[in-house]
Image 1 (tube, rainbow, N blue to C red):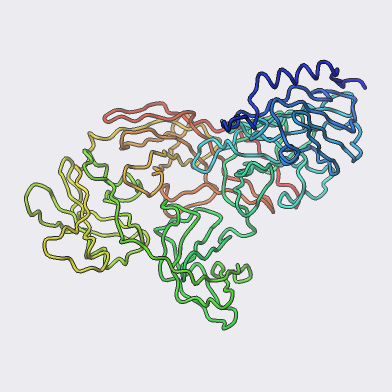
Image 2 (image 1 turned 60 degrees about the vertical axis):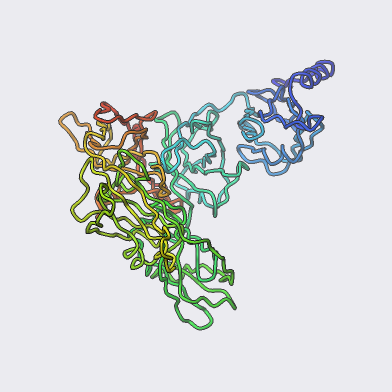
Length: 579
């Protein structure tokens, strides 16, 4: 058949011998480690790019020993082929196709990159390959490249027909991202498409809706051979924009998952309703803390009133009792070690960048406890004093609760640059113990307060199609802090050139990742509280446009990193398809 490569038997034997000699086996003798390199495909039948072929059998020759199960779970047809069987004999693999392939159709076989390096095999049952191209780049929510993503492409029906529900429909095409987050569909049929990116955590090239985040495009319709797409992961898909999961972890303690990040400091415990369906009574949320340690987190741990462990309970966002999630409270109790605390700035920081862990808050020392502590107890146990005498007097301080495990404390008169302070917490008070005479119960951090001369800055412009533009600078997690990666945000201002100028005038030295987004809604908290809208999958609403500055930016004290520009991809507006 024209375009098909048949491997002569003698050549096949020679290639297998070379493969055995040149590549390590996945089952090496003498108990050595398996070869971690992806399997290479030496030959395929049909050839890559073959035309006028409609094979009933597809053959591969691999560089490594492979199993049928590995091939089966790494295999994807675009468009879908429903009925086929996989067999593997050592390094030879075969796919027997029982379905009738469509005439004049380009097919692409994709093998998962975890085992096969993202190999693709395009071929056509007609005289030519489809060559329409859609390409782009995917980023995680923290704007790091998404190296584990897959992208699903859905061809839009012609003639005004109803658009597919991407939540339930079978995708027409699949692509995988590379280590830099890049993806491409080089063999699309002519037409218009909708895309959804999925964080394929387990590498099975399938979408687990309950555990894998998605990212959406900034327009409803994508036209091939136009602007590169920029997709930012935006969380787990849900029919609602609120609570999506509830997991009991201890008696009267629940781990909640939300579709969008929650500002832990402003979380409202009355925003969720817990109900006993047998009695109709509600159970209050008494306190909460971030499950991940981050100040903005999709997972919140709540401590509740007494939950009935004799049957399931229901939880829902307030006012949406129709979308209740059922869970069975646990009787599990966990014995915990004595409470400890970490400080930011950490001990012996010179200078100590007070407030670096919480960029949008007043300068303060961050206290992160290993478990929940009542605010009244922290008020009694925590103090700040000025070093320089044997018995330093405690300053008048302001304590602020972020969640049940996280607090900030600062002098009422603020920090004086160059002054050495001691932040302390009495562990005996925190743990409800009576201190023995002569015992040392203080946990503390001594640091010298940073001043303007200890800071650096970043300036630049954003080339964006419209405003407002919010710019983000993501730093490194401060030493001794478990509050997650700090994020500085500012609003860029349109200047006389039509660009949007921004400045971060006081940043601690370090490495920063710069990005920006165009928010579609207003935010009462200003730039610091702004979050990009991730869009909705069905009915489709587009995500807010985002952009990134390539590479990290180094900030040094008393220096300004200038001309750190951020360029948004060109944006073409298309109408939302009929749902």
